[in-house]
Structure formats: C-alpha cells, structure tokens
Image (tube, rainbow, N blue to C red; front, side, top):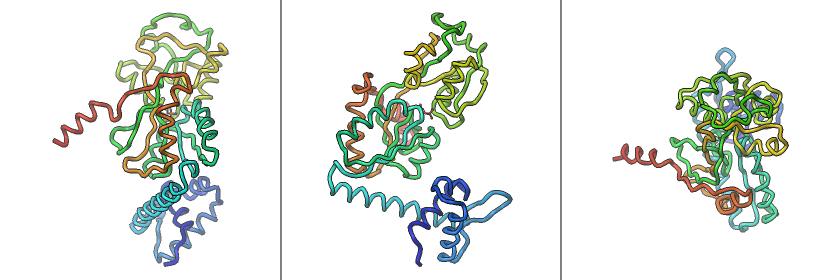
Length: 321
Ligand code: PGA
C-alpha cells in the first residue's frame, strides 16, 4: 500500500463534510485537486470510498473504515508532535485553539499577554460557533477550546474561567430604556434578533425563555454578534447577547442594557479539551494562564463553578450505581 498522509487528510475532510466542495474550501484547494487526491487513494486501496445517491455523497463501508483509521493516524501524529514539542521545552511549540465567536471579544487580549511571555510559541486561532467547536473537539482538531457551558454528555475536561452574563440590549431611545425591573412577560411584545442555529448564545436564550414560558417574537436571524449589534442600533429589534460583546457600544452610548427581571442570564466561560487528551506543555501553560490570570487581566471575577454541574454528576453516579 502506497498511500500518503496528504491523501488521508484530504479524504478525511471530504468524509467529515460529506462534500467535495466544502472540503476544498476548508483545505484552500480546488475541487478537482480534492477529487484527484481521493481518486488516487481509491486506486491505492482498490475500492470506492464514497457513493453518490442523488445529489448527496455517502461513505461506503470501506470509506467508513478508512475514515476511522485516518482519524487515529492524525491523532497519533498530533501526539508525536506534542511529545517532540515537550522535549524542546515549554517555550516552544504550537497552540491550536478554537474559541466561540462571542469569546473573540476578550481572547485576543489574553493571547497578547501569553504570546509576549512565550514569543517562540505559534498560535493558531479559529473563531467559530458552539456547534463547530464541539465538532472540532470530537474530531480532535484542536488542543483546546474556549466556550460557554460544555455539554455534559461529551467526555470533556472543562474548567470555568470567569462569568459570562447574557444581557438584553436596545438602542438608547427604546421605550423600555431606563425603566426598572421590566417584567419578563413584557418582552412578549418585542421582536428579538437572534443568532444562527448552532450558536451557544442562541441556545441559552431559547432555554431561558422556555424555562420561564415566555413566547418571544423572533425577527431576523443574524449570523454574528457584530451584525446583531448593528441591527439593534438600527432599531430592528432587541438583542440578547453576552455582555462581553457590547462593552464598546455601552461606553459610546450606542446601546443600553435593559433592566429586565431575572436578567442577566448567568453563564460562564470554560476552557475545554477532550478527557484523556495528552496536553503539550504549551497547552498546559496556556490552560494555567487562563485559570490563574485571565479574570484578573480582564478586570473580572474568577468563576469557581464545577463541571460537570453537580446534578449531572449525581445522576451519572446514580446511573452507575
Ligand atoms: P456562540 O457561543 O458564539 O456560539 O454564541 C457563546 C456561548 O457558548 O456562550
């Protein structure tokens, strides 16, 4: 068998996306280049790895097997890189992190301090939404992620870094601006601009309103915090966002936080990685840095909540018993 790591990498991207086009975008290649690599791999392995039904492609049985092994091989190579990196010492190496789009408002500040301290560390930073972060954790594509509440059902190590309050924002001339203790039910008369499905902010918002039985009207679905803020300023509706995202607009008086009962929704930021993952010394240092210095550097309170939440731990223990 004369297959190459490159062929496996390209194949894995197509298998993960179940699309040649999306894999080509992800790898910054042309679609014919991607097809060619997969074809060559199929020739080497003497069998088809994908089958097409209608417009969709699916993995064949052999394709499923090759996909499993390609993930194991990538994992082993990553581990090898980690081991070699550790031999060189803490100040060297690569840190691959992905952060929730909402965390992007404070992570660069933290990275600035960390990178000044370790100038020989190369950082790769991906900014994406919650759903994609979970996918990256599942596929072992990153060393660690910074995200809101991690799902208890995934096998993850998570430690809280600091609080992440979610607030309702409005333009300063909104009729509710300046009112105190606005009842939750009053929100039913307003329109909310919402983040895209897969966003952690959106998930928290839906969970909260369901819990309190509040039926809100949703207006436009907007794919970024920035666009939500612009749309709220333009009077298109209210926004429910992490307070971290609106600091500047509050200071400039472009947005105000509404004083609504039961608000803010209290969430936390977590540093998260797969349980059992072998962390490089750079990743260990970054994790320690986040847990011991991040809140202080950002002028915030450290969170001491535990993960998984206590009730989940109990129910797991009960299930095990
Ligand atoms: P989001 O994540 O950027 O996907 O909304 C934030 C969060 O999980 O709180």
